[in-house]
Each structure stands twice: as C-alpha cells, then as structure tokens.
Amino acid sequence: MPEPRIRPDRWLVALALLVAVGYIAGTSLTTGYHGSIIQGDAKAYFSYLPSLLFDGDILLNNQFQTLEPEGGVPYPYGGSHGRAANPFPIAPALLWLPGYVAGVGVENVLARLGFAAQSPGYGAAAVWGAAAASILFAGLGAVLTRRLIAVVIGEHNALSAVLMSWVGTAALYYTLVTPLYSHAVSWFGVASMLYTAHLAVVQPSRLRRWFVAGLFAGYMVAIRLPDASLLVMPLFMFAAAAASMRSNRRALTAGVLAWIGGLGLGYLPQGIASYRLYGRWSPSSPTELGATFHPGLFFDALFSGHYEGWISWTPIIALGLIGLPLLIARGGADARRLGYAAMLGVTALYLTDVLHPYGRAGAAFGARRYVSASPLIAIGLATLINAVADQPQVRRYLLGTMWALVAWNVWLLTCYEILVNIHHTYPTLLQTARYAVGLFAISSP
Image (cartoon, rainbow, N blue to C red):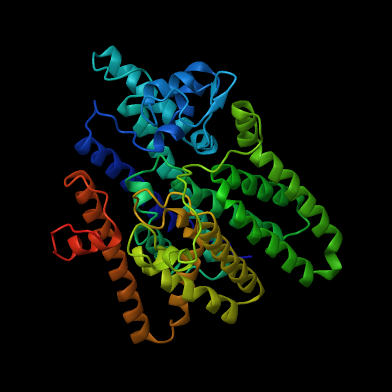
C-alpha cells in the first residue's frame, strides 16, 4: 500500500489555524472579550468542560446556572435525583479539553494582571481554547481524509478535493462560526473511523489495527449518536473483504472480534456519562423540537429553500455524489469497496435526516447534519476530477465550476452572518440567496 506524502497536509493544518484565528477575530468583533461567546446548544456541549476541570465530575447543575442553556430553567433537559440531565454528548468536550485547559491558563495569567472578565472557566480565553481545539480536530479529520484518498484513489487532486469539501460546504460554517457543536469534530470521528477501517481490511492479520479501528468507530458514535448509522460503512467493508479473502477467514474473524471490542471501549466515555446523568447508556437525541415526519422531507432534506436542503444550500455536494459511483465503476478492489461504503454512508445519513427530522423548527445554516459526510464528499470530488484527467478542457471547466461553487458558499455564509448579526434575522436559504445577489429586501420565503 503506498504511503501518502506528508507535505500537502501542511496546507490543511494551515487552513485549520486560519479558521481558528478567524473564529477568534469574528467573536471578538461580534461579542467582544467581555461578551457571552457561547450561544445556543454550544452551552450544553461546553458545560462539561468547567465541570470536569473545576469540579472533577459531570454534575452540571451549577454549570447550567451560569450558562443558562435554555434560559433560567434549573433542569432544561430534565433530570432526576437532583442531577441535571444533558442529552448532548460529552465526547466532543473530551477532545476540546486540552485547548480549554490552555485557555483557562491564559485566563489565570490575565486575572493576575487585572484583566479578569467572567467567572473562571467561562471567559473568552477558555472558550477560544476549546473552539481552537475543535477546529484543529476538524483539520486532523481533513488530513486523514486526504491520506485515505491518496492511498486508495491517488495523491493527485486529493488536497484540492478536501479543501473543496471543507470550504465549499456546511463544514465551513461549523468550524468557522460554531465550532463548539459536535459537527466540527464529527469530521474527525468519521474520517478516523473510515481510514483505520481501511487499514485493517488491507492487512487483516494485524489485530491491533482492527482494535484501533473499533476504538475510532466507537468514539465516532460517542461524538454524534446519529452517526451510528455510519457504522454500515465498516461493516460493509468487512463483509466485502470476507467475500474476497476466502483463504484468510480465520484472521478476518479474529479481526472483526477485535473491532467489536474496540467499538465498545471507544463508546465507553459517553456510555458512562449518560449512565451517570440519567441512568441509561445512551443519550436521548439532542434538540428534539417536536418535528414529525412527513413525505415531503424526502425532497426537502436535499433541495429545500428553507432551513433544510443539503444540495440546495451547498450545491458542490451534487458533484461529490456523482463521483462516488464513478469510483465504483473505474477503481480497483480497494476503490470499489470504499465507493460502495461511501454511498451506503451517504444513504444512511440521508435516511436518518428524513426519518428523524429533529430541529426543523429552528434556524441554522443548512445541511448541518451532513458535516459528518465531509470525507465522503471529498472522496467523490477527487474521483470526479481524476475521471476527466485525460480531457484537459473538460477538467479545466470542471475545476472552474467547483471553485466557483466554493466561492458561492463562502459568499452565502458571509451574507448569512450579516443577516444574523446586523439585521438580527435567522434567514432561510431563499432569503440569504436574495441578499447575496443584491436583493436586499428581506421578505418571507
């Protein structure tokens, strides 16, 4: 198996650092050092950090009194036996913890210099440290995605595809604007799961690789419970490997058992947290706003002009989806296996979004539940570019179209943020697009 080159990864690390600086600069301008940077569901995600560091537990009552995730309600998400429940997972906060500790250290230094702004652990430096860690983990997910593309599809265009998948989709919003949700680190979760599963399959006799792949798969589920549907990808890869390696079934069986053991251990931090908070091993689905299924969601999830619409909000997704069947048709055994797995993963996310449509009543930059698919879209984009490599004119037009869609996403996000922060409205896609093309009047969709 070819080893991927390291040098292109520096561009992705540099982009992660740039996004982190952009987040700090943006929040400095919108809320200031003394303002409340944490907003919305991020308060519930963030609450674990001061509880772990200052209290040494996950009893969140006092954290919710400070953060007030749903106003002044003592138990905003329910609770029993005097404990406030939190349906949002702890796994993202565990990844943010090193950055948070560094930020608290900065706060302590500033306090000694007379610049204390808020209660210890809730100030801007602590928030920025946690957010920077979240963005850097998204960057690590991008690096793993590029390396997977490099070893399965080829180095050529791997970096461009990952950059497009980041800057041209909702992944940009959930790293640059709201990194303290689970979406940013979900890229790391899915990419690490997929990359390690591939490494395990190509060398089935190495049990350590299977166990590590299981660990990352379990932690992916711990980061975002809806991403449990993406376990269909490694399971398919294992089944496909079993069908093609009839002479090595014993090693494959032992590997799958090691993977299952790693899966349970990887999920264990969230299982323990859930059990301590409300007596069961899995959290309830976050942000349940009472939405119900209706047949129109099959269309709206992809093409809505309101708050949903994976493809309508970020149209470069369509090109990535076109690339996945091409990978199956044009690739070797490893590429076909990855292509089928990626298509199953996209389908699983789509069906999860349609059949469990929480959050439809709230405003958000579209396609938030599909940030987990960032590695899959990058795989499709790389395949599509490589498919026209021997047609220079077609390739030039294709790349021009792709980068134009990336630019549109950046401009749309800019207009969305202007409408939110200056005009104080949470716009739909149609409202944002009207504003983006110069129709400044904000009307009902």
